Image (cartoon, rainbow, N blue to C red; front, side, top):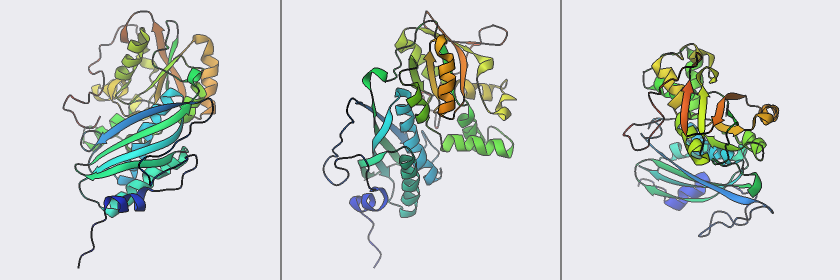
Length: 327
């Protein structure tokens, strides 16, 4: 007689339940009980990842588990919040134990690294779909927002840009890179690094922040709109991998830098007088930070070439309803 398929609660027990560290009541009741630390408010974010839309269906499940947690951690990083708790809702075409075990290992390894307790969720049958809600803590006065940029501020980004989009282009056969650069770019796509440590350093220091998930121009546009300002980006200052910098004049790589998405770097602003403190924050968080432009009065985002001319953008970023797949 064939073994019975595991049920919903069997899957949760086997693959997802872990000891908690800062939770009053975790998995097992109808809801978890959470107690924020004294003087802190909760920062809450939810991200959904849909197969074929946000990731390739044959993505390694361990890497996918990592990414499902990492993209949510990135949202907390952009708020300057310390991660604490997460829930996961997952729809599965079928309960494949090997796939689930690898996914859960990647998910929990990333959660463990950043001190996150998994405190519940849901499973059901359906097309592969992952939805994570993450909660963190931050002092209300120090929380980073999109709305704080002011004319005269400098514009910064963490890390490097365009590599995840170029990794996707490699997987789709649209870009040929040397083996080390190809491996690096695919890893940036499938295993992004959330800039949590930098976000904590920037809390109370940066004037505004956002994480780059849909592309620099799209996400910077959200920040500029929320702040009621204009952003000017110096194209030559955009940091990227050396192998991509050599090709930055090509349309594919240029689009990846400006609009590719899936970078999960932080884009933030700060007064010019804070420049040394920003550089010190990057050192403390072990990530490079680069000034890529300025904030001015007005509206919109402008990209300026090295010769001072305005560069029109072919794309602004990933649109979740434009029919494209995998940003």
